[in-house]
Amino acid sequence: MNEALGLIEVAGWSTSMVVLDRLEKTAAIRLLQVEFNDLAGASMKIVGPLAAVRASIDAGQALANQMQAGCTATVIPNPDSAARPAWDAKPEYNPLMEQAVVKLPDTVGEANGAAAKQPGNATARRKEQRVSDQAGFAVGLIETQGFTAIFEAIDTACKAANVEVLAREKLGGGYITVVLKGDVAAVHAAVEAGKAKVEGLGKLIAAHVIPSPTKAVLSLLPK
Image (cartoon, rainbow, N blue to C red; front, side, top):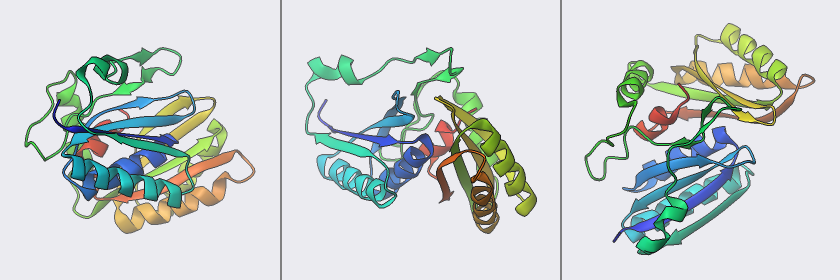
């Protein structure tokens, strides 16, 4: 492997998606996979030219710190092939969480102009098209600890603006993220309204809006 390997581990799934969006928008890197840890967070693994990977990881870590999310990151130039089985995780399904804990992107970036050949690509592409069929769209993510809080928050969000509930992601430990879609202004309004409803019902972990999310982010959204 002649490319550099970048590793960035972020607390919180929704925050991880915001950081991933920044990674891809900063430099020409490829996302290999995202692996959930047992702390309701995710480890993102990227490859590309050393300078691009360094720039991308630095930008992602700066954003995570700005959002006050726990973050650990490193860049490994020319990683040894013997070490690959340790970090290149195989697809894994967690029956307790009822979802995959190793997520492989449908599109691994524009740098090499190729799409990943992975099972489920057709479903991911349909989902990506459903999200991106609207000009100026955004996705919003509200993450709580406690299901009652998120259900109330999303009901409030949908009443506040013209948005669609796209998906939800359970992370274990009572953590759950719901993903919204709509135009940028509507998603901002919905997320703000939803956030305000969480207090007293549960713990707000994160609430973010991603305007024009990258293809890998779209492909990794829960199905």
